[in-house]
Image (tube, rainbow, N blue to C red; front, top):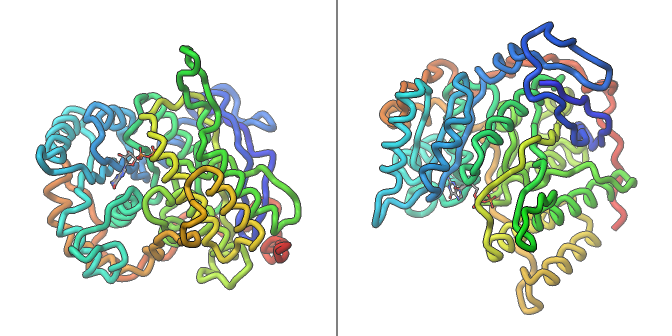
Length: 434
Ligand code: GDP
């Protein structure tokens, strides 16, 4: 892949947010083919991306999607990745999960691909989280709660058991396997550019086509993403003192993280999960409060935003769904201890203007948050859930047998500071203008 090197960045404590970069060639060939580096653009050889993808789990969260769409995403996942499908599809009156199971088994056999399929409401999965000391994810009925973020946390635990270093997410409601394939290659490209082991890659959609006046219109920004980005940028600006537009992927469902970073973030319920990643980075590694992870503060975190070349064709959301998504995204920013009072008021005004909040409503409520998975007892989780993984995966997943009771120390990456930044400089933020 031939890709632009980030030209702009914004520092916030130990975090470096890079501005969006463009892709100039989706496939630039093998090592040494066509020139390696031309100043602002770098050619990442196929071998490098393949090596990263070999260590990557690609997660597909599913809830009642048409089976053709789910299959289409599986066609898009490179063979060298482990695919993890976490389904919360209804089991009555028709058992949609059984249909998914049959389709995925056939597919995995034909494609000789490793696929793990789990149902979010499998009682054994809920029990595994309880046994492992992570009860927050489990409801009173003993089952994992509803929501996409909740499914993502199950997948994160499975990826950890499978010993993966990278975790990429691809929504199942995507009509274009070609676009999904591109995102997964771009995840690998972002990790290839990263200089530290705590890294995140977020996809900026080239466009999201829709019908306007009977014609296809390649819209760049959705209603939710426009406002989420605006308020995230405002939050960063209030601390740095310089207005910024660095954040362009506040709602990006298509994103990937190194496992080491994914295990150290907290997660917000349902659709708040993507903006919450940014809030979590700012809160935990922004330098405003003492970080629970000094190793991350020392090494730094890199956040890449890569603009895809394919348009993103997905199932269009209904107005209520858009309202719900925007509501939880903005409540995530509103609920952060970092959010200055003046910005809180602006968010409340926005929620009222767009009919998410009425004058009679109680104050904006915070969204449910889940703590980092890092301290979960993975050995116990493994013990409880292993049987289920062996029966639902088409090829047995090679689970890590050793050292599961405590997380492994970081094993990848170089331990040097982020580009051009002295090790003792954790960024220059100042208190907000309240
Ligand atoms: P949007 O695409 O961000 O507007 O949100 P969607 O409602 O389309 O959901 C995004 C992805 O998450 C899709 O693949 C859904 O099938 C999936 N999804 C939604 N709710 C759940 C859930 O409760 N559990 C799981 N595992 N996946 C979900």
